[in-house]
Amino acid sequence: MGMVRAAKHNEARTPRVLIVHAEDPVREQILAALEHERGCGDTECIGSLHELSRRDLSAVDLLVCGWRLPDGTGLDVLSRVHELRRDVPVVVAGETRDAGHALAAFRAGAMDFILVDEGGLALLPAVIERCFAHVRVRTENERLHHELRNACGELTRHRNEFEVVIDRLERTARTDELTGLANRRWFNAMLAGSWAEAERYDLPLACLMIDLDRFKELNDARGHLRGDEVLRIAGEVIRESCREMDTTARYGGDEFCVLMPHAEARDAVVVAHRIQVAFARALTATASDEPHVGMTIGVADNRLGAPLDAGQLVALADEALYRGKAAGRNQVVIQAGAPSC
Image (cartoon, rainbow, N blue to C red; front, side, top):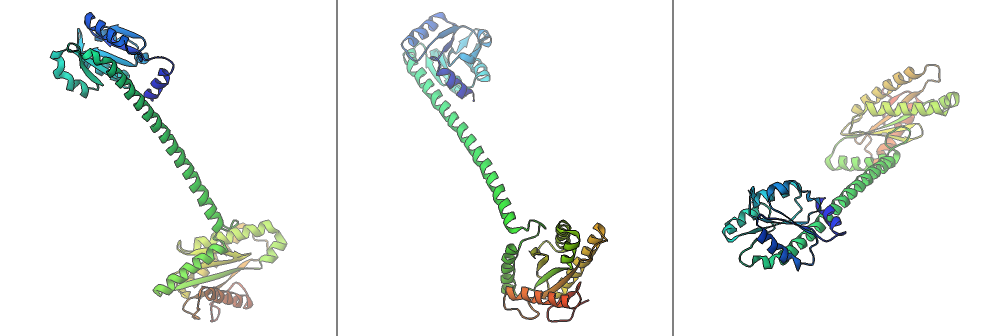
C-alpha cells in the first residue's frame, strides 16, 4: 500500500530527491547532473547517516547516497531507508575503489550503483528516470494486485452467498415445510434411485406407508393448529425412529412414507412398531383429553409380492395400510399377509 500512497502523492508534485553524501564537490556534481533531469523537483543534500536518521522520508521519492559516510556506509543508508520506506529507490554513488561493493549494495536493495569519478554521473539522469519508471510499474502492479485481491474476495463472497441460496433452495425444494421431512417429490426421486440399486445388486428394499388414525376427528375437535402440531410430532418421531440412510417423507395430508434400503419386511416391521410406540408416548406427553390418534402402518419389500417396479412396491405397502385400517386401525400389516398385531 505504501507504493500506492506514494504514487498518489507523486501525482500532485514532481519527484523529490535526497542526496546523502559527505563530499561537497561530489554533491555539487550530482546536483549539476540533476539540473537537466526535468522529472526531478526539489533536491536536498545532507552529509551523514545521523542527519538521515533525523529526516522525515515520507516526501522523498528517490535517494542518491555515497558509499562512504563519516558515520557509516551505503549499506547503513540502505538499511535505514528500507526500514522506513521500502518503496523508495536508492542509487549508490561510489568511487572507483568502491566498485567491489556494488554486488553487496544490490543485494541490500540498491536500485543502481554508479561511479562518480569515471563519467558515471553523466548517466545519473537516465538512471533516475529508469528508477522512476520502475516505481511507476511497481506501483501499477501493486494497484492491480490490490484490485485483483478485492475482486477475488468479492467473487468468493458472492460465490459463498450463491451457494447458501442454492443450498436453501434445494432444501426447500425437497423438504415438507411443516414436518421437516422429505416431500413427495424428493421421496419419489430417492425411490427411483434406491429401486435401481436394489435391482442391480439384488439388495432388499423395504417401504412403510403410515397413516394417522382419527386425524380428521382431532382437527374437528381441537382445530388445525393442534392438527399441525400432531403432524410435526409424527414427523419428528418417524425421523428419530429410522436410520440416517432411510428416506422419511410426508406423502400427503396425514400420510407418511419411509423408504428403507438394505432392509427386508421383517426389519421394517420392527421399525414400524417402534414408531407407533414413540408416537403414542409423544402424544400422551402433550395432551390427554382429545380424540385418540394412532398410526396404521403398511409394510412391503421388493421380495414379497414380487413388485415389478418402484411404483408397485409403494402400492403394495399402501394396500397393506388399508387392510390395517379395515382391520380396526392402529395396526402394522405386512403386504399379502395377516396383520402382525
